[in-house]
Amino acid sequence: MKASLGPAHFALARTLRLLVAVVCMIVPFRAALAQDAPAVVAPPAAQAEQAQQAFLRGSAMLDQHNAAGALVEFDQAIALVDSPNARLYRARALTILGRYADAVEAYERTARDAEVRARTEARFAPTRSAALEEMRRIEPRVARVIVRVTEMPPGLRLRVAGRDVPLDQVGNAVVVEPGSVEVVAEAPGRPPRRQIVDARVGRPVTVQLAIAESASAASAPLPTGDSTASGARRVPTVFLVASIASLGVGALGYGLSVGFFAAASARYQQLERDCGASPCPESLRGAVDEGRSLQTATNALFVLGTVGVLAGGALLTVGLVRSRRTEAAVAITPSGFSFAGRF
Image (cartoon, rainbow, N blue to C red; front, side, top):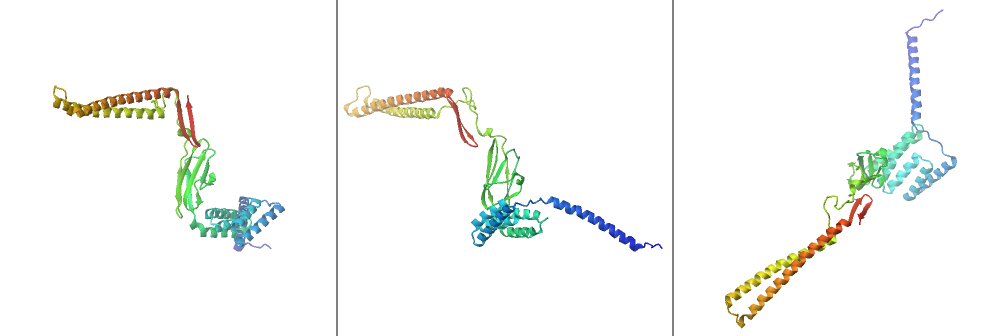
């Protein structure tokens, strides 16, 4: 006797087929999820024991309010076995020490590592939650700087507040202590770029750095031939100063000689009116002597002016001649000053 298949049987079959399809979808998904999580290789037993002892010592120091000593122990534990739990306690030590920028970075790293490990080890889920919650409490104490560069040449090194920034983090917010922050970008063969920014809480500041093509533009080329790069011959400073001083003395001598000459002329004209064609009386001898003194001073100042002008011209000429044989250049380079010359 044959059993007839009613609607209930077909519904049950459809349900079974749906369950099989769901299972087939879930199993590969869980396998892929497990593959995304990096495999954690168990450390040697002795190394794990050393890490555990360092972690316990750090925890005890933290309870004794010795955050600096605890930080050293946690760093040692992480160097032996990189555990999100040890990183969480390290972030707590940094927070107690008041190094809030470092603490926020440590909490962020803890949360990332714990999230990855929690995919295969559920015990790290609370570690991630604790890191995020504790980081949220100190966020108002830090500032952030976003650095962007126009290009990323080979060997580029980026530093913010004295700390190196990984190149894959360029464009992301870097946690810093509030206040003046120095941003430096360096690359081989190129002048460094530095910029000081005012980092404030709650308002990320963006820095745009353009790295020059070459450092050669920072130094002037050494002149060749008998002229400088500008086409004009430059007189050595010592000759230039001496010639200017001599010309100044000459100009002063000429100016004073003109003044004394005018005074002497006025005096002689007065004597001519007083004495006429006859010799001057004894009563006017003082005026006659004064006129002669003025004339002597005029002659002396004229000679002084002439000597000054001639000396200034001679010094300027000697300086021009020496500039043909001695040329020097001082260049400012990224590493300091450089001096070069031809003698």
